[in-house]
Every structure is written in C-alpha cells, then in structure tokens.
Length: 252
Length: 224
Ligand SMILES: Nc1ncnc2c1ncn2[C@@H]1O[C@H](COP(=O)(O)OP(=O)(O)OP(=O)(O)O)[C@@H](O)[C@H]1O
Ligand SMILES: [Mg+2]
Image (cartoon, rainbow over all chains, first blue to last red; front, side, top):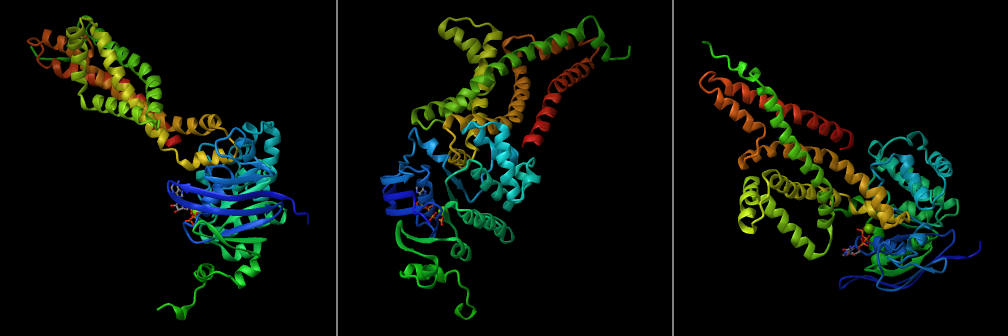
C-alpha cells in the first residue's frame, strides 16, 4: 500500500484561556488509514478532532490536509471541510428536515450539485445502512441507532476524504451500538481514512491501524492495536485499559 | 314594563356602533402587530449580539417596557409627551406608538429566546458539512426559529388585541367605550342592558381572538 499522507499535524497546541488542552501534538494519518484516539475523559480527544476540521481555532502549530493548511475562520475553511466529514455523539440531525433532505442539503447547497444527482448519491448510501425506507421520516421518528447511521450518511454524502468520529456510540443503547459500529467497520474496509474517538475497546482493536493514547493533551503512546492492547507502555494506558476489565474478585 | 335589556342591542344603530368600536380596537392592534413583528425580529437579533453595550441597552429597554404598566406608558405618550415637548400626538398615534414599543420588546424577547434555543451542535454540524455562516443561518437557523416563533407570535397578537382596550382611557372611542355609552343612555329604561352589552363585547372579543388562538395551537402541535 502506498503511504500517501492525508492529514498531518505538526506541533499542535491548543489553549482554552490559560488551560493548555492540547500540548505539542504530532500526528500523521496516511490515506486509507484508521487511527483510533483513546484516553481518559477530558484529555482533549474531542478538541483534537474539532481542531482537525477547524471548528476550534488552534493556538500554535499547523494542521495540513493534503498539504493545505486548516485555519479556523479562514476563507478556505468551508472548502476544506467538504473533504472532512464529522459525526458527533449527539447525531445532531436537522430536526426540521426529513432524512433525505438532511443528507442532501449540503451536497445541493454547498457543492451545488443537482438535486437528482444528490438524491442518487443519498439513495446508494441510505440503502447501504438500511435507511432508504426511512428517507421521508423526520429525525424525531427514528431510534438513536438509526439517527446516528443517518448522521454518518449525511457526512458521507459529501464524498469526504477523511471521516472524524467523536464517540458516536456513546449515547446509544447497547443493542444499537453494533449497527453503527458495523457501518464504520465497513467504511474502514472500503479504504476510508478515519480518525475515531471511542470507548468501545473491542471495536477499536478490530478497526484500528494505529492507536493514539492521549493523556492530558499529550500523545503518550502511538502503537499498532495488538501492541497497545497487549503491551501498553505507560502506567496510565495500563490503568485506562484495566478500567474496561471487570473481575469479580477484585471488587471489595 | 318588564326589563328586557337585550332590546338595547337592536335599538337604532347600537350593534353597528359596537362593531365599529371593535374595528377601532382591531385597527390599532393590527397596525401595532404589523410594525412590531419586523422591528421585534431586528431587536431580537440585536439582543443576541455578544457586544456588552448592545446587551445593556436591550436589557434596559426590555425591563423598562415590562415593568411599566401599559396604562402608564399610554398616559406618558398621550399626556406626558405633549406636556414635555409640546408635540401633540393624537390619541390614535400615541396608542400605536406605545403598543409598537411594547410589541417590539415582547417580540424581540421571543425572537431572542428562539434563536438561543438552537443548540450549538446544530451550528457545528452545519459548519462541519462545509456550510458558510450565511448558509447555516438561512437553511438551519431561520427555519427552526420560524417554527418556534409562529405560535408564540400569534399568542402575542391576541394579547395585543386584548390589551388595546386600554386605549379607552385616553379617550379613544373603541368597543368598551361605545358599550359604556349605550349602557349609560339606557340606564333607567333597561337596567339590565349592561349585562347584554358586556356579553356581546365579550363575544366579539372571543370571536376576534379565538380563531387566532386555535390556529396557534394547531401550528404548535404541528411544529412544536
Ligand atoms: N469550549 C471550551 N472552553 C473551555 N474549555 C474547554 C472547552 N472545550 C473543552 N474544554 C476543556 O478542554 C479539556 C478537553 O476537553 P475535551 O472535550 O477535548 O475532552 P475529551 O477527551 O473529549 O473528554 P471526553 O472523553 O469526556 O469527551 C477539558 O478540560 C475541557 O474542560
Ligand atoms: Mg469528548
């Protein structure tokens, strides 16, 4: 596989006021690579993702997509964002539009492609995630899992080069987690470049080409999944992984 | 002779006069509503600006209008302004000015409420799809705000229609005043006229406001 660099982060620093939230992040994501970002709550995972598509302004360093610099609030940002799809924990579909309109809005208004073409694109994707029958439904009429699959399709309908996922299953009932993760696994197999924040360890292990462990805004480990899950190097990562293991006799 | 106050309604042009009185009320409210809505939209957007100066100004304006009873505002506009500046505003104009000032404040607050109730995530989702601020405003913010506002605006309209009856106190001949005149003119012949006249006025108000409020409920259910 060729190693074309898709996304490159150089020495990224992000402050909220005086609080340093991301502290010297260096990361390269190759085309077709799936990077999973793990770390304890508040370590800066969401912020890192939001910086990647310019939803947060960065304080220092640079983020390059295909060699083009991502700057929040710049003129080019809307162009660049079309290449980066993002899915959030709370789905955030547009409540006043049905599923089909949710999905085709941006292709029609932002990419200015004809409605018919947008709907063809949408049909293909909605069928793939089993939501074509629901295209006329409004978001409030769908289950959490269906909403999240629709939100993924909404992002995919822009034909992005990179997809960012921020804990997209964290708000779902357990039986709906699977249907969403399956869609993501399928995407990964299809060669989509993805950066995923998740608390589903099994899934992370299965889907990732590379695991990033964030601790207080710093990357403290970067490893292949097998390596990370069997042999984490830092204490925090060990503890973090241990927190997902339940052993009866250890609870007092 | 038996007192059948109901006759009063059909004597001469009494009923017509009541209707005319209602028209005066409705005209003042209608003009005020029509002016208040666009002004309120601007005021509402103005209130959401982050600028501390605009925030203070709008806060003071809103609180002032809310704290002052409409009656006091009416008196200030009608008697006070004439005294203070020597302008003599007609009763109609002062009433309209007061109701527009009031309507703009209330409408503005509704617009502000609808705007800030749109979650930040809606903006983020739109931006993440590559939409510009203008596109986000047009396709995401406006339609959602609009749906929330329609029933609220209709409610405000009915409130304004009802409150307009206060203008009787600055001498405008509207429905309540006509009613009072009819009652007074027939005080001795038909002592129960009051009951009938006020009953009809009640009915007229009801007929004016009821369809509006039914519509508001319907829209609220559809879009709520
Ligand atoms: N808009 C903001 N303003 C100020 N501080 C913020 C803001 N957003 C995030 N933070 C702070 O930045 C830090 C990192 O937040 P972030 O949401 O990126 O963490 P996270 O790793 O995604 O956590 P979680 O797993 O709970 O989602 C936290 O300390 C948080 O309080
Ligand atoms: Mg987060």
